Amino acid sequence: MFVSTTKNGIDAKGRVSVPAEFRAVVTGQGFAGIYVWPSFNGAFLEGGGQHLLEDYSDAIEDLDPYDPARTAFERVIFGGAKPLIFDSTGRVSLPKAFLEHAGLSKQAVFIGLGKRFEIWDPAAHEAEAGDALKFARENRTALRTPRRRREGA
Image (cartoon, rainbow, N blue to C red; front, side, top):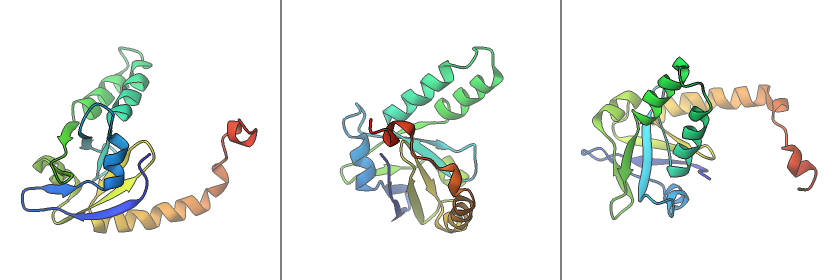
């Protein structure tokens, strides 16, 4: 699982170090890197490993072949994703279009979200983090322990 929040610098060539914990998640998934794409939810990047893309593929396959949502998700996720290979120090090179989409320049914040992660501009993340905490507080009763854990399975 992708967990934690880490801020790393971006060099002049658009290279950023992927947190070691994130690299460990994707190790052994058949690809020495991560997949990243511009989010359709806002000015940030989304990403994950091979398993995440397989989960998205399964979810999209469940949609009707002629559903416009299917085509939109395929275009945005698969068409927009770039495989970013780790260099010897664990860095990846973010494409210029990705940097522009997320407003990234000197630093990037990696936020672990379980099966996936996001990459944000630090100032934008700070503003969003406050909103997310407020929303979570106001909606905390919606979060329940899965039935299988309550029953001891």
